[in-house]
Image (cartoon, rainbow, N blue to C red; front, side):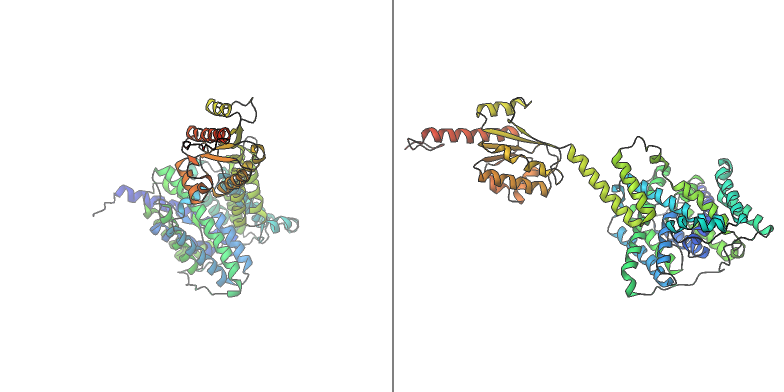
Length: 553
């Protein structure tokens, strides 16, 4: 099958890739420095991940490379394995391998089940972490290893303030924040700030720290070691990187879909990202994910196919092979100013604007994830956030479920059919109506009703209004039926076909007898009245020895 490639698409892909590459250059260098791996690590990672993710990924216009969230976790790994670069490489390699497994096992679709407050709290936390980690470089000191250390080290950084570094950082932030959009569309503001402020610092010979020498030429291949004593920590950090990279990438893929009106392949995208991160580890590069800003710029500049991502990576490779000596003079304060813009842009203003109006439960989840992200651990924050969101959802669903006993109060507003049966039975039939989800969060409500049912003859449990029933609800129902049976009370159920299958599988149907489950409330009420009438006939005929339902001898 012959595939055509129009020249117009080629021009768009080349221009889009070059534009994305220009934006990626200062960010890759800044993320490399911020991670502790060095500027070269950021550039190596951007090239390897950008190239292989573009070729093997499932989002045609996505541009991948080091991102703020991935940089934060990588910095944690570098700090955890100080001086042990082989262990850091193994963390990155294993995280890429896990992403490939996520894609092969088709887990890409599950990202849509992560609640928005969790994502919002996580992104806000990442933004604050990036901002906090720039405090020392902005003031001319060495970067802190954690947000808490950055905040605690502020007094010392102020005491050792380098006014030249602060001036460069402020001027850099002024450029990246205040450059008009019409200019940024042609030349990205981070690149303008990088060139202008680096030239100014070099021309005036400012006494500020710089990136330092960047190796020229192709990177060396690094094979990871296998430190068995650190294996649990390596797996934990690798899992954090893999999960974070998955979330970060697929959210960017969704953004790309909204712009291109296409539909990405989540599982293929994870495989491509995993391969890219594995290759990045082998060349000593920083891991990354789909980069939202670079992807959007690529699309807006005309990129429509995978070639745009390849062009982005090749441009960075050209910089590595020929422009390394120039990038070595870039001041760290300039990169810090650029990263402040990145941190501010990551913050989720969409939810922050609704703080006064959003549901309190969602805000609780968001702020919990935010606090844990900043002060504890990123992967723990996501896990706690999802668990907390599930608890909140369970609470909300449980509040909407009611289990009502009809016939206990004559003033109750029962349905006519229930009222007729109850009245005809002389209050010997009671109806329990379950409205809403019947699951572990509401099953305890069933146990509270048992004592109120003692003294009647037949209880009809109407489950047809429950959209689903889990195993906890089935066991609660089974325990109630046992208590009623011990008290001499018969039970009849009205259940859907799906509920009948669950009840029969759990042997609840056997407790009710052959005619104990009915497909409608009307049928169940008829069966209950038959039981009551049968008992009345037996009691009336007991003196003559007649048996209900049979002819007299």
